[in-house]
Amino acid sequence: MKIICIGLNYGDHAREMGRTLPDKPVIFLKPDSSLLKNNKPFFIPDFSRNIHYEIEIVLRICKLGRSISEKYACRYYDQLTLGVDMTARDLQSSLSSSGMPWDISKSFDGAAPVGEFIPLQEAGDMNNITFRLEKNGTTVQHGNTSRLIYNFDQIISYVSGFFTLKTGDLIFTGTPSGVGPVNRNDRLTGYIGDRKIIDFMIK
Image (cartoon, rainbow, N blue to C red; front, side, top):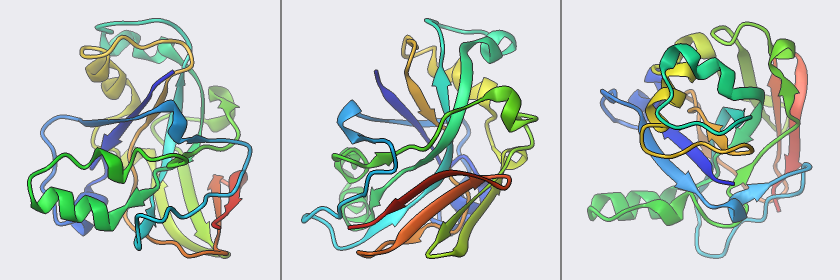
């Protein structure tokens, strides 16, 4: 199982990070050891002093596929959830400024909490899914898939040109604006519409 992530896929987030809009999907990977399930707590690692949350819609791949045409891409995912792309922003900034790969800033153990997976039909129109993240009861991120730069089918088609997709693979599809830091004893709660999908503590 692999975790494929798409960066800078909402214009408002790209702008808040001071980045230009990408002319093709930006891809990075997380190992399976990044996966954090069942609302287990996230433990802030010793190597960072600035861990940020990034809420995202996550797709679950349901069958093997390679070089998938965009018009058939919808056949390759059957469930979705919310995930939080936990990011060591201090490491990312330092590595990026020196021109070095910043994989470790997003791919460390526990850096991919995911919530309850739901069937697609329960999420509604794939191009109009509203989701949000609350930190300690206050909404800090609010997104809608209508604002994706690259939609789900475009992502799957593009990614599958480089990587064979396998059943159980996960795709983090990008975060809207509002990313920010977490501290110990914070509580992160994510919703699709009014349905609670993920709820975990920072330790």
